[in-house]
Amino acid sequence: MVYLIEFLKPIGTERHTARTYIGYCHDKRYGTRLHEHMTGRGAALTRWAYRHNIPWHVARTWPGEDRAFERKLKNQKNARRLLPARPTHRRPLAKRQAAPVAPVASSAAKG
Image 1 (cartoon, helix red, strand yellow):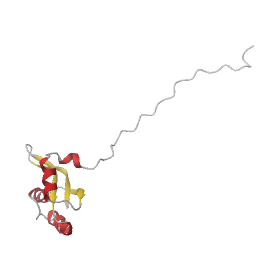
Image 2 (cartoon, rainbow, N blue to C red; image 1 turned 180 degrees about the vertical axis):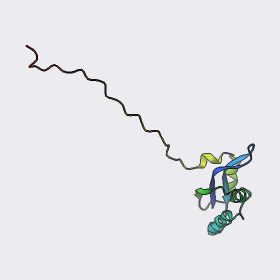
Image 3 (cartoon, one colour; image 1 turned 45 degrees about the horizontal axis):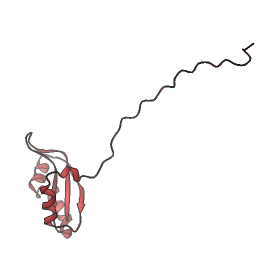
């Protein structure tokens, strides 16, 4: 299984930051591997996040994929584009004011 972790804050220094981590483990070991990441015993990036209290979540998984697939994704050097699409938060549209309406002359006023 290949999985994509998204950090909710940038990881690293001002010069070198990461927002994602791509990892691999056997499908049966997935829960154990996530526990290692959560307790600061996983990959270097997740250990750094653990030490600095940076929250993260698993954004995407590819069950049944192997290390070659993980390497293919990592070699693309653009893991953020693999993140699922999120709804955009748009500002509410301003209420439009109705244009002033000229008073209509009644037929009784016509003489």
